[in-house]
Length: 116
Length: 113
Image (cartoon, chains in turn red, yellow):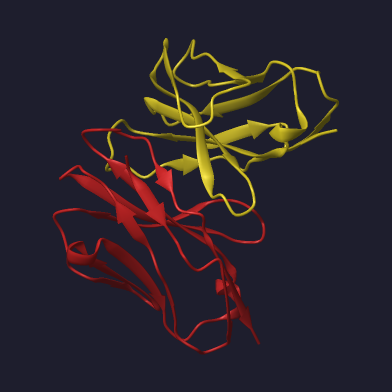
């Protein structure tokens, strides 16, 4: 069965520090998709990125970057020069094309607090 | 487009009461689902639907019923509320297939006393 683990329950940093959120996944499918969602204090869930299992290129979007490594089953998320507005809960999630289709399995989430 | 809408935003129930959480989407998405979010447990799938007339159980279906009579609507029914169902409930929709991002509603915060 698929599983997503976010071992860091809470992280606290000072503004402008870089921070990496870890995500480790388990799946038996060869075709799968990994996602990151952000949940700010207001409570809504905001989609950040999707990566498919055949594309191991790292991705950068502004201060955000993602490192996908199939060899270690990890899909880590780095925020460079963190800001107070980055404070949120971040979720990593997995879907499997063959086994579970659209169903998402979420990790437990990492609460990131960026202090001024 | 309104996206995914959920009502109510907040609800307090007494143990044993029943209620329906409403969810609607206007994006013509085939896939809809319900999650509950509890502290330290991420989001867990309750029920999902791949189209009108088709529903299936997720990870934590006990105590909940769903139906999908139209593409747009996917209500979640609590048959006899229990304190263990105190949670934040999110409805989501997407196109069918694992590659598509899911769009989430704003959530319903339910307290069962």
